[in-house]
Length: 315
Ligand code: ASP
Image (cartoon, rainbow, N blue to C red):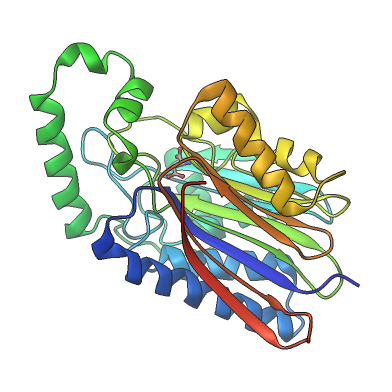
């Protein structure tokens, strides 16, 4: 029988030392809450939604309230959710005022025939289902945005003809703090969820990997679940979450995560992290960014509960 497990992450990129302890306590809190639900018989789907909501409500993370700002200083948040049992999933994108984007992704998955909904019309659906609204902008993100804009203006404009180049050249500090969660429940059902403000200074209208099934997240009861973080354009081009799941047909979760990141480094360079979970409840973590903040809660071999939280360095 699979052991109930949850793994959550708080984003790849560069975690400044000052933020590390708060980030770790945020992921630990989300994993602990999710594991408590699993222990009480909660479904994997509900658990990943709850864990992601918890992190969306924590302004340290780049998701929900506390999302990073785009080039013109607006929030445009994305989120996705997938149920490994039914293979249904959906994403939402370009949200400005839905307090918990992950809840809207679940509404799209369960109440519509679509797999991706964006912008104002998506927000209207949230209103119709009574989802709470909130301003997602925080003073701290406005401060960071002003600083990043100043750096951008000082730099050689030739460097910024392409946004991805900007993200790469200006470093991993423009990424990060996106959140994701994977869980396997007592019935052996798997689920994946993620949520993000995207990469900071993105062009208005840019949608990342997080709401795209196969790229930002994937879950299939027959093989496993995965969610990616980092440069979304890489995750989309290489369909990394589906690839990591496919790798789990033959490999453990950790082997699949490591192999996926090795391939990413070879084909697209640095800028990505991934967490994985296989059918046996084993998890994996790999990244080629400086850091990835994550926590996992599972049962150890002696059947005691165990929470491992970590800010892993690049490996
Ligand atoms: N993958 C997210 C995006 O590209 C950003 C991140 O994970 O930090 O929108």
